[in-house]
Image 1 (tube, rainbow, N blue to C red):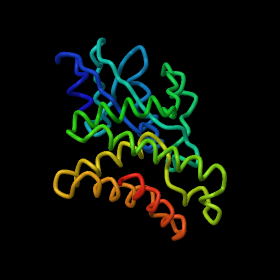
Image 2 (cartoon, rainbow, N blue to C red):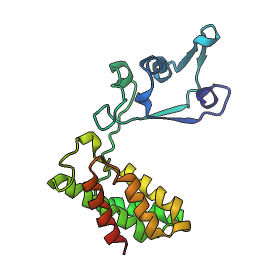
Image 3 (cartoon, rainbow, N blue to C red):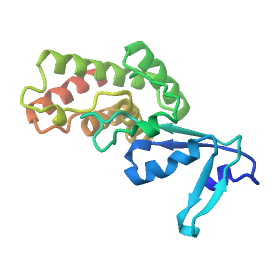
Image 4 (tube, helix red, strand yellow):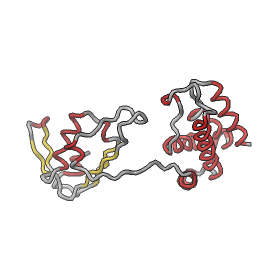
Length: 201
């Protein structure tokens, strides 16, 4: 893929390397010369053949920081950091922002926007309940559901998958059960599902 997007005889392309820091350290270090001014890729599999990449080729990498929230990510070496222009994108956590994003995606999927907004409302209800200790008292941080925009998008995808056949009310409950109410605390799960059921009426 990299060579298709970057060989000098080809039309230059843009290559997005998502979850970049989940690659092995060896792969990351091998990629460094691609980002240098020389733009060279050495193919050790082909007896060290060096390919000078197209000057207009644009590599973009995306990654989450190596924190407890994102296990398995590696900290990039100084050599890697020095070859990138870093743009930090904060979490999309504002309720109005999330409703706008989910409603737009729901409209593309053919899911009623009211369901998307209900997912966001439930999501923020959960954030408040975990923050005030109503939920999660017996859970470690790793056992609590991921309360991020990514989880909301996954929930919406579940609604889309089951909504047409089962109805969007049941699909909403299924999304909540599968994405939010699967913690080891059965009482928490019951409270979450009860609240979701009340919202779906």
